[in-house]
Image 1 (cartoon, rainbow, N blue to C red):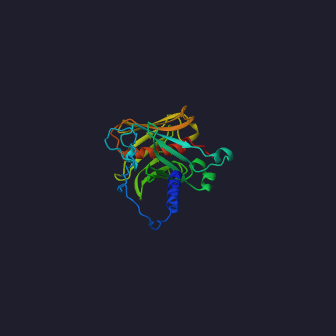
Image 2 (cartoon, rainbow, N blue to C red; image 1 turned 60 degrees about the horizontal axis):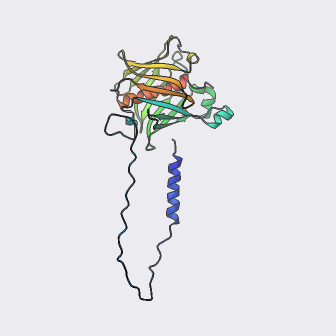
Image 3 (cartoon, helix red, strand yellow; image 1 turned 180 degrees about the vertical axis):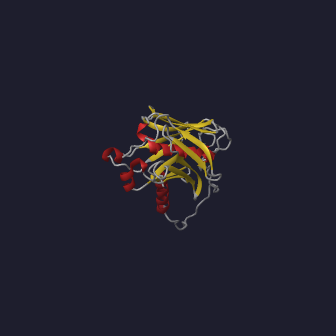
Length: 275
């Protein structure tokens, strides 16, 4: 899991300051006569710092700062990958890290991949991994788990599971064996039913290399458009970002979390360097 260096440094400095405080000395006794000119007064009470106000857009009065509930009422979220210097210098793939941001640029989640170096070297972007998402309170809000699968036509389809701590399965995203275009199904674990269908560009089929860097996926259920996912170049960021746009404002926080998991699966299957 990610560790906040700033928080650790702040806690460390506080412990050092407490340890360095001098012990209370003995009361001082005066031999000469002392005249009292003023009465002792109690110290002024300290005013606590105000609680930071979130700038995440939403229509609700109370916007939670923890868990996946902070996804509710957001019109869109944007996934940005943070690049490691080791990847650029050595060409060896390391564990990926991402920041999930709101439309205003606020960091909603910090995502960190957990995988082995052997899997990254052998399987590349198809590797199995766990993705841990931490919220603003530095607590784990979501966990994405991807197992090793060779493809929809090879015994087991590629899939990703969406979990919430301490070990509750929300749902999963499963690849469909289609030839003309990429297709995925998002399933709800509690109802064991299909809730969304994710469709990619027509004509790309099962080949991950056929998709361009800029592409578009639509998410629908019952013939109605519910959300969309695209991968575009952001000139302001000087990098590609994966963007989720929630077309249906009535989507629950749980449904948005499932869609967020599907976006991470698409990120690895289509937009990551293969090896």
